Image 1 (spheres, rainbow, N blue to C red):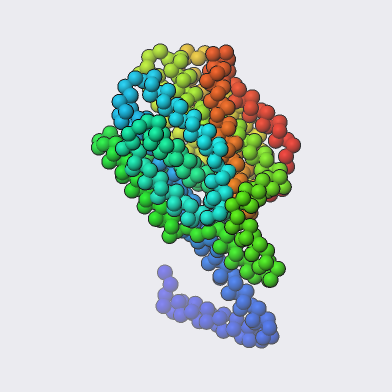
Image 2: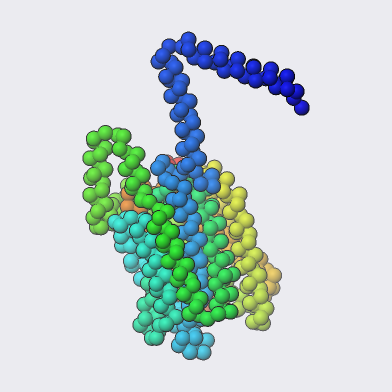
Length: 479
């Protein structure tokens, strides 16, 4: 412990040091002193800017506020909350509202509505991307959440299956797809932090997926369908209002940064704004950007193959378990265990990726991800499909492989997006995604009798290997 005398000596030393520093500064020429003071001020301001433009360690672009960074993950959480809820509960509405007690009729009608939704999504996605580019992220995200809330409240009151129920389900599918497949990361996050943002975004996705059954399906069990849907509707409304005040347009930040570049740059900005004000020029701009950046062409192919894996979680695992486990109760228990374990492991994998993803070379990540998933999809062909433990282990491995492939897809695409027509390019990605889903669903529908479920898994594995061969023609090191 310091004595009073020792403390006084220390204070004197500090004062002397400060006096000497000021005297030294006083002997410097005026020009040098001004430079030193400006350097100190700029260093302090830079540190404040780093704190201001950083969210959970993710570096945001200049001019982007903390609230914009938060909005990226709020959109992901709430989007996955509603998509999981609609996916699990719409069949309950279909069954109860229209007294579909025959299980085969319920599956048939539900599958037809799903197929119609996928076809329409494939057709309209690029145009929705153009609309988002035209009206901006803030307005469109706000409108999408509020209108999703409105349609959610109407769904339990639909009266005709092939009129209002189907119409509302299709519009909800289009809206929710537009919410989830957004450009917010590349709009607001610096390129060197995109990997970290992708990892956080995946964690946000699992938070939404967990909250949906935990909160709203339990609410559905203890109240009524109408009450639960109305509560979900209010939740979407509130999210839309929050985004209205928390988000700002990425073009606004770019405009502020470019204001310092003189008259020529101002003319270029004015020219770009004129182009962005035209819907069809956005579509043409997206096509031109894909032509000028070959990596975006590869991203479309990658999305086509990787998103086929959506069919695995929605149909393939269920069919495989039910086809090989005769006891239905054991089959459901096995499926629940395998999916729960895989979800937990996938969530845990995201944690180290927060720090590692930006340090991994894109080509290495792609090779590992596609090889891992391809190998996992060949496993059913080499095991005894009547042993429940092996089935469960295979589902866990395939689910992890599918998740890693999606991380690689998100990372490479987000890293290589351009500066214009991002919504349109995102729409092209959605289009290829839904075409891939349709084709893989067709494989299960028309070829399962010829090649079996194991063969259907292997088809996707072969597609992964073909994608790897194609990737050797592209240079991933340019960005």
